[in-house]
Amino acid sequence: MVNFLILIEKFPKFSKSDIDIGKTPIYVYNLCSIIRESFCLSYSIRKNNNLYLYFESLQLLIKYDGKKLRFLGSDERSQAILLNKALEKINGDEKVKTREWENSTPGIFVKRLPNSSSILENINNILHNKIVFIAEFENKDIYPDIVNLNDLDDMNEFSYILPYSQNSQSSLRFLQVIKENYNLKYINLSNIKGIENKILYINFRIDQSTKINKEIEK
Image: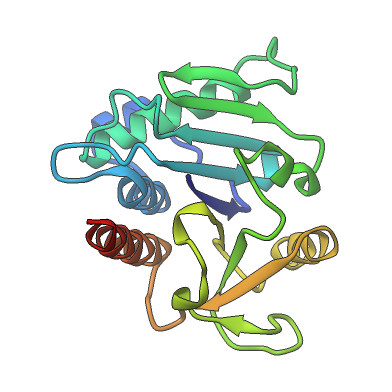
């Protein structure tokens, strides 16, 4: 099971009417690209992938469960509408104050968190030695012992953390928290621009590795 966790500071305020008239914010389209590259294949969905979007300003975690995901098309409009429904499910309804998972649409869930340090507790099947922080630059003080994807024993079992802004104070605070509680690995993908392209590359490498392993088993 592959998990992608995206740390997001600001809340993309938009509505279905914005989507319908073509005024969806570019920021939201960027999120849609991340969603698309996490799941969409030519004619199917990556069932073994999960995507988590954490909005710090709302203390809100959205989970896309690949095994249960329905209605996610490859077009940005359908992705934006499903994202909007998930945000409105918990942000627009004052009755929703629980910190339990709330189902938005099939395979998409939302949950309030007490703080960012509790994010990883809500990631499916997370293992302390199976977490990778995708770094944007090499800094031995912040990111010690940077490894390559080839160094991972099984890329299919890792959770990949990708902050929207690695220089932000919130990202650095979160990084410090998980460093204190988990055995992190660091991979520098600064040569690949955009989170969606980093996810595309990771999925490609996982597909390659899976294919090779199947050929070896034969």
